[in-house]
Image (cartoon, rainbow, N blue to C red; front, side):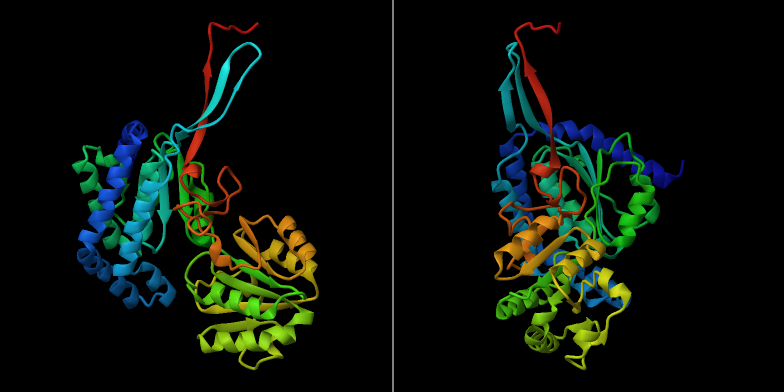
Length: 419
């Protein structure tokens, strides 16, 4: 057995051994750790930024896309946001031990369904070192042990954040093995991680198509995918075009490098000439590259020709694909063919069109007259999240505290036996 495989197996064993310890932590103890970790982030903000700069400079040297570099960067505001996120998790109700349902059988048996942690979770993610803190906080509050494997581009940031986490756990007398950060970018470490069936209960990958494909081929552990977001807005023939313009601009430009950013606009042919010239101009002024079909190109010479690959693309950049469709049926069929089950929105003043759109599409969030950017745990009032699940299992959409638990049946009797 190679030394790396032994190392990963040891990490898995430690996580499995520590899982019962974090599962039985009191709500008060968990909240104290989360609050102190938030304080630690603020107190070490200068060091975090200094170490993060190593990753950012390396990314720029490798000529990674600007959106990727943006996701990688930790500035003072983002560190404050990370700390605030931990405090918000501390203020959320503790799901562990919650009775979700209870009933009594005719024979007198009292039965209840009670929330329990999943156990040991392996989280594999790319680019964003803030996920290290977000995931650690959510897993701790939901009573799970977690092994975090960030991308090689954020290795220095993740290792340092892992150290801050461990220091706070030790200070509170908690085994630091409940939250472990892999300190190697070696791909073989991830290969070993997804084979630890004896120690890890669930793998959550966050990333693009290549990571999801790789997980499907290699993981022996159940996987809940947080796949790419090929998000759509359909601008209906009955749309308020001023509203549509504001929504499409926000959904693409506010933060293009995230999974709930808009990637494709579908426009009803009766609305195209009224909506698109102004929309394209607004995008152009914001530095957005517009790729469109023949109908879109005929309205503005700056539009580049969209290829077949554009309809499946998650750009995570200031690029948008636009297609003119004959009707809502064509828009729905396009989304069903090219979407990733992430987020879709319809802009219309016609309630029956809206209801049909909302009912027929099964993405993790479907919206009416609202930006795709709202598919986010905090924005939906659900609290912090691990990410957006695009897997139709027990967790679909924002995956927060409740989704990091399962349930067990508790049965109380007075001596009943089965006949």
